[in-house]
Image (tube, rainbow, N blue to C red; front, side, top):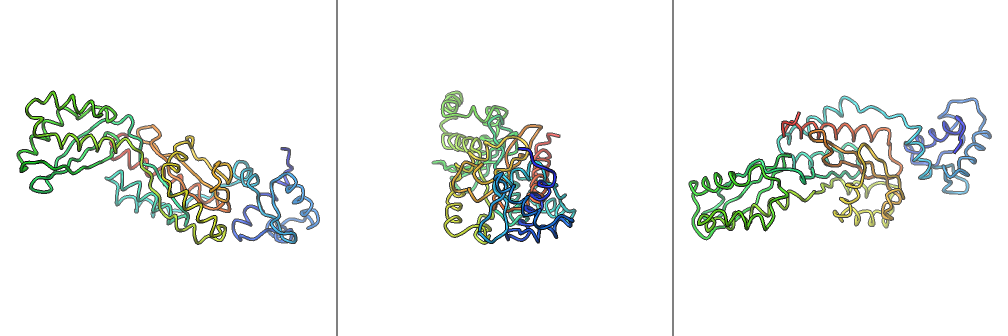
Length: 343
């Protein structure tokens, strides 16, 4: 598509003005925004050409123009100048994340909350995929006369705990035996290897001791299964209900989609490395036709670990939102690497 420099400036000005005001942009307002000597008639002609190209839309007969989905896409790819995140916002992110700097699961939950607060949109994050992780350590904590909790820590910093019950009284000495025996057998092996067949083989190798451990072994198996499942953290979805872009029906469909975590996870995991913006129908989800999703990745040990993103209207300030998202993702990756001592 061959577009003149003047048309590109007009398109950028329309996107930025519409983002600020939420009102269709007319030629008079555009003249003021561009601060140029070109007449209103010339600008109207250029706007008509942009509309014919499918880059602008006219919501009402007598109204100004607004960007189309294609117009937003061209703006994001070619015209947008990102606005650096402020030092105040950086301090807010760093300070807020520091509260959970030693707990990977809470760190991702906090990251979503911080992002929702900063953007006033919905924020989503995925926990690191532990498909290649190994078991770093097992810990046993007594919770009752006959109950205890096993805590499984992986090489990627994920923690999972499971309560189990025995048919005999537990004691600190018994739990120390569990700790020593199972760490000798399990620590260092891939989490993916902890299957029912593996647990059966392990029980057989323990001989008479296996009679004391069936519930503990089942708890380890369940904890390992949960570790392998990538979880989705969603915060701020109710922010979307207060945005003028979403009518009641659109908001309801969007809420229903966001509550289907498996579909949301599939969408996020399909995003490529780097930052990706899905504008309206680019998501290929009818519920997201009037929405945009901005997704970026965070890394651990030099490898992509998970995704962090925001969901809002197509009329979002991409130039502001993308730097906030990328700074947060970088901060999360740094803290996760520090937790795992990968750097």
